Length: 226
Image (cartoon, rainbow, N blue to C red; front, top):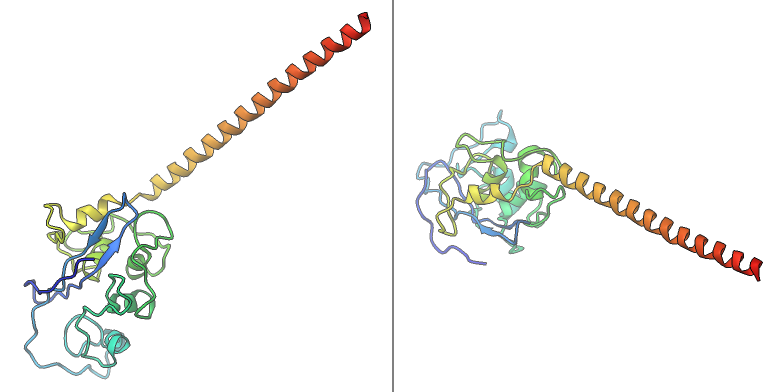
């Protein structure tokens, strides 16, 4: 999978991570936008003792200190590009999604709607909770797609185009989603076809048995005449 060797500029308050995920949509593989936060030159501020420890961010890189410690051992050590299991999902995103640096899969989709479990975990808290293309961030990007593109629900702007094909990553990702109504319709269609097939089988069996009964009756009548 292609890796990014340079860091293009972006809004200073956003941390964008190298993130690749293979979606179950006609084999589409999207390598998301590269890490693009500009360096923060101000001195790292200590986390206030009264603050929620999960929100503390000493180096102000948008990766919580607790997550950085899980990734590399200190509150300021992570670059955002670490990916020790080389699955395309940065370690810090995996920790945010499910607690360790190797727990997420870019292809696992428990619901079957095209949204990977790790993105759903970050957006709404479980691998099967409801989110979709209508659940947008402030930039009009589906929050789950923003997680896939750059690691958080709010970071994607809608202009990211990692494969440079002229179609934004957000649009490509959103196109792969099957709405839950669509999943229900698919299930109903399958059920209808199964019922129709069963009915056809029963009718065919009935015709065969009727034919056999007719032949047996004819044979009995012939024997009686003889």
